[in-house]
Amino acid sequence: MPIATPRWRREVLRHQELMDDMMARCGVDVLDVIRKDRGQSFVEARTRCRLCACAGTCRDWLLAPDGELSRPPDFCPNARFFRTCL
Image (cartoon, rainbow, N blue to C red; front, side, top):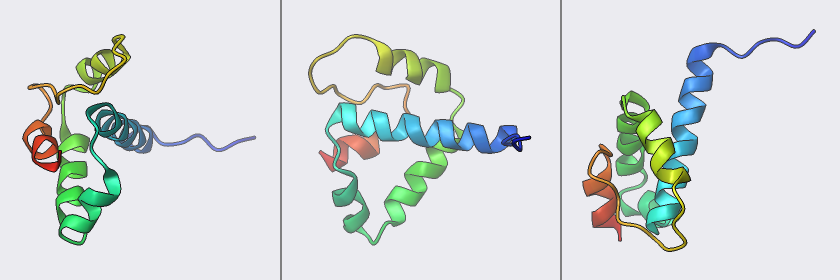
């Protein structure tokens, strides 16, 4: 019988996936962000994302049809950070 993944872990992984998708949609290069200050800004952004209460809004925004790179949405707690990384 498989062991169930704890809910908190699923939530953390879901938020990480949303952040990865948001960065890709906005054209932010993850490796550039990590190189910026040896990853400190990236870790801080991950924490802001993990604590964000807008996961549903984020998912809906990411699922909306858009064939081009997009500007980070204002509801995102990392929007300003992502804009500085572009």
